[in-house]
Length: 481
Image 1 (tube, one colour):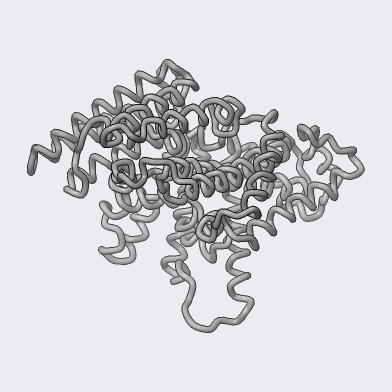
Image 2 (cartoon, rainbow, N blue to C red; image 1 turned 120 degrees about the vertical axis):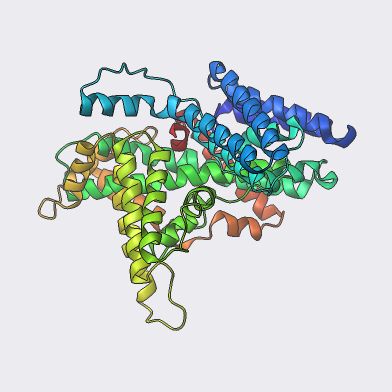
């Protein structure tokens, strides 16, 4: 099930919350945690029960390896860490990358490896990376291996299980053990409903509408200028509202259980550089890549040439982590190229002091245009499809405004007459761009949140509006990774 579904909102969430707080008086919260583990495993199995055994086995192996790393020292500890890394990378590689590598080997060397067309287990990239980070933290003596139930809850806690954020053991489990967090907290619950409603609205009302425009545009050929930009901007906005909507719902669900889950987004499209964009977009992935890829490679400690190489390698890994396709690899590598060029030119951070008033908006605009252009590669099914959109975006002599009718298409509940499709999509995209660039983000709204009739009304309006859109249910974009 997904957060934006009837079964989750009307059945799973109320039952899970009710059961969790009914057990709040039991000794040390042990039964609360066991109940939450069982509920989270049911949540995961609901997608495909065949892969329940996979995540359970992954937890068992990683927990056993972590225990051996903690008990060992020196080369023995390093050996167990290596075995743990190989197990996790092998598991991820088999399910996510087998066909990718087999297909490329067949093409280059003329081999005949049979493609398996494996169904990607939901969230495998996230829970594998999370467990890898735990093994490394135990090896560095930054974390300790505790009881299996606590480790299991760290991995499977359903608000962050299938699409992050990628959390750390030390920032999650102590909250479940905190006596003050075990009982129902009306203020936290109100804040959780508020955040969940914002996220649900982003996903169901905004992202799923934009998905029609993006899907229609990427399915077209011979795009003109207007349709090319409508297509790319639609996806740029869709992936933001889709993924940040998921993250807002994750934070809101955590609040309902009195657990603080880290924010994954801080107005990324307002960044003044691609480097800053990656400090604001998918923040916990950036943290993980920095900690477990960039710094072990040497980070910025070995001179500028080595720093640039480390950045390129880190973003190459980021692209490959996102998907088993050359479009993802190129998308990640190009981000690395821009980040590297910014580092060389000293543009990776905004300059301090007084600047002409046009500098900041100019830098934000340039960064946004770069990010928007690269999202085309991320969304395209292949390079040919990406090329069609790029041709449209650069067809300055062919505005082809009438193509916008095809981009809007039969947009679910919209179904506008063709006569108003063109001003509609232009106004819709412009309005959402204004929201992205001018409105407070979710973290700022939560920081200022105070339960009141106003916030209750705002939550109710957003929730009802989004709930009415659930008939257009679609999975979250990052469920595919």
